[in-house]
Amino acid sequence: MAITELLSRPWPWYVAGPLIGLMVPLLLKLGNKPFGISSSLRHLCAACVPGRIDFFRYNWKEEIWSLALAAGILLGGVLGGLLFRNPNPVSISPATAADLQAFGIANSGGLHPAVLFNFHALLTGKGFILIVVGGFLVGFGTRYANGCTSGHSIMGMSNLQWPSLVATCCFFAGGLLMTWVLLPRILGL
Amino acid sequence: MRNLRYLLAGTGFGFVLTKSEAISWFRIQEMFRFQSFHMYGLMASAVLVGIVSIQLIKRFKVRTLAGEPISIEPKPFTWGNVIGGTTFGLGWALTGACPGPLYALVGSGVWVMAVGLLAALAGTWVYGWLRPKLPH
Image (cartoon, rainbow over all chains, first blue to last red; front, top):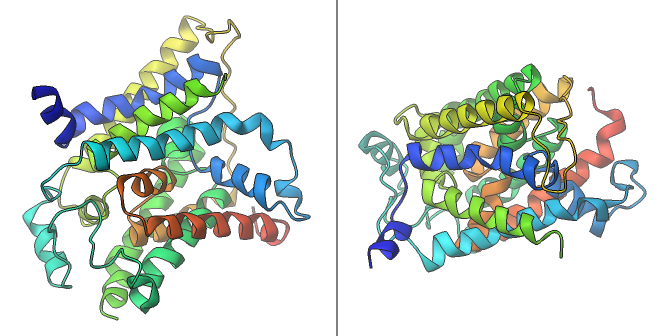
């Protein structure tokens, strides 16, 4: 029972953070691979719909490791989010809970607010912007930036690459602009 | 299958991501509102471990399992780091997810995120299409 309890409850940052950091040496040791996730989106495009676009015309089969990694993350989500699901709501700070409650978003269990992230919501302006526009910006932005939170903020910064620090600051700039300026309007739709 | 090791590594990563709640929209909102140390501690400790690991790998000239030398390609600066980075940040705060969490969320039962993932693929595709015209 104790192990199930350990696997079901959320892990503190000082346990999870170092484990995430260990992905960097692990992938290098396994086969000299740089840690990064967003490039898997490019390989999927190259594998499925390359069109006549030079950016997608390369031998994606050499990058199958990246797709295996992505598939693994999905599996990890199944294990962590379904099989060993945390039965309690995310323990966010009371201040965040209050801020979100003001928009009618209750923290009543689940990793994502069910009221915003469901298939019916896709047909509303709010849900469409959060899921479809948001997803599009994630895919477009990470490729344009040549990396995401894994590739830049963890891998690049671990290798002391200053462009990755610049990218990370811009990730935050965009996130702050959205959270403080745009999102209140979107959530009010 | 020689890619099995990456599948397993990804599974471990996805599990930790889920347990850390870094894939939660609530946690991302909390982070951008500066209302908890959780996400900052998570990232800072991950980077710290990463920095020490890479330094050790370089110092002791660690090789891969297959015995090949480890080399890390530098990430050169482009204006895409700034423009694309900011664009991604906007999407991060909307979806509450970066690419890794997009995969993990689909697995964890937030099924509608499969649509978010498809939208991210569309975004990546459109970038590839517009790439020759974009400033870098």
